Length: 419
Image 1 (cartoon, rainbow, N blue to C red):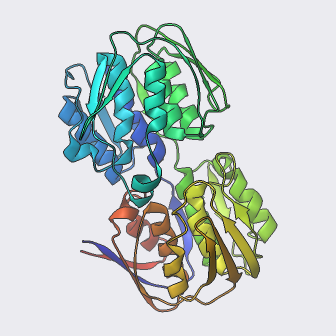
Image 2: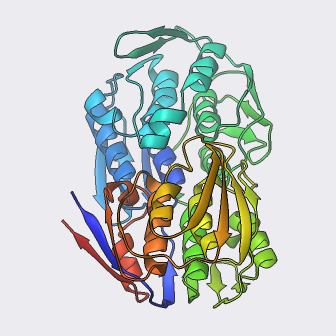
Image 3: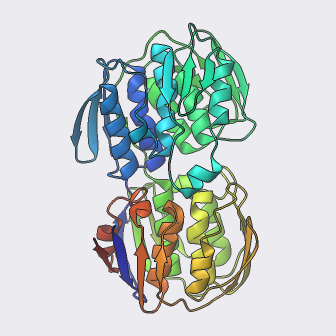
C-alpha cells in the first residue's frame, strides 16, 4: 500500500494547474450509454473513479480508446444490463449507470454501490429508487442485487426530499429520453449539474432550469453524441487555495473557474486571506494575520462540505476561536482527532460540530487518510507541520486528486510517495 512522506514547514511558490472535475467526469462516463454514437471526453482526470467507470463500461461492451486526459467511447454494441459487482461495489458513482441502462434497455440489475467511508455510511440510494418508481419502473430488492425493470417509462413529477447532486443528475439522464414533460423540484444547483444539462442539450435533449431548484425535461426520441469538455475541479481549486493560505505561501492556481468557489472567496475576504482573481486563474498571496471565522456547510452555492476538511486545517493556523458546523455528513468530522494528535486545539462538541482554538503549531505524525477530503486536509496539515508526517492509505487521496505528489513537488513541497 502506498503512503506519503512529507517534510513540512516549507513555504511554497509557483503555479499549480487544476485538473478536470472528478464529480463531472464520473457522471459524463455513464452518459455515453444514452447514445449509440461516439462520445469524446476531454480534460479527463486520471483518477481511480474514472478508471473504474471505464472498466465498468468496457465490461458492459463499450468500445473505449483511452489517451492522456481524453477518452473516446462507443456503446453501440452494449447489450449487457447487469453491473458486475466486482467493479460496481468499489465506487459509489456506479449507481449513475443505472438510469441510462434503464432508459435504453428498460431493465438493469446492480449491487449496492461502494465507495469511501463517507459514501458507504452516509449515502443511501433511496432517492434514486423513488425516482425510478415515479417514472413507472418496478424495483425488486434481492439478497445481493437490485433489479429494476419497466415495459414503458413515463414522464413524472418528483420532489427531492433531500438535495442530492447525483440524484438530480441520475433523474436528468433517465428522463431526457422519456416521452412527455418531467419536472424535478428541490434539485441540486451545482456547476456539475449545469455541465451535464449543457452537454445533453447540445446533443438534442430539451432540459431547462439546470442550476436552479426546478428542472424541466421534455423527452426526446434519441440523442446524439459529441465532444464533452470536463469542467475544472472546483474542489481542487478550493483545496489548493486553502493550502496556500495555511502554509502562508503565494501560489497561482491556473486552469480553474473562480466563479465556482465564490463562497470560499467571500470567507477569504472576511478572514484576511489576500488574493487576486482572473477569468481562469486565482492568485493567493502570502497572508500572515488570518482571523478565525466560523462556517456552516451547505449545498451549493453555500460553503461546500468537500472544502470543510481543508478549511479546518486553515483554522488551526488562524487567530481566535472558530466553530465548524458540518450539516451534510455526520461522520465527516471524525478525522479531526488525527489533527489533534498533530497538536491542534480542537474540541468535538458532537458528530456535526467542532470548536478550534488557534493558532497552534502542528507537528509531524504517522496518520491514516480515511477519505478523499480528509486526505487532502491531512496533506495540507503535513505541509504546515514541523517535522516529518507519514500518511498511509493514500489510495483515498488518489481517488480525488490526480498525481498530487508530483504537482506539489513542482511548487516546492517536500513530498515523496513510498510504495
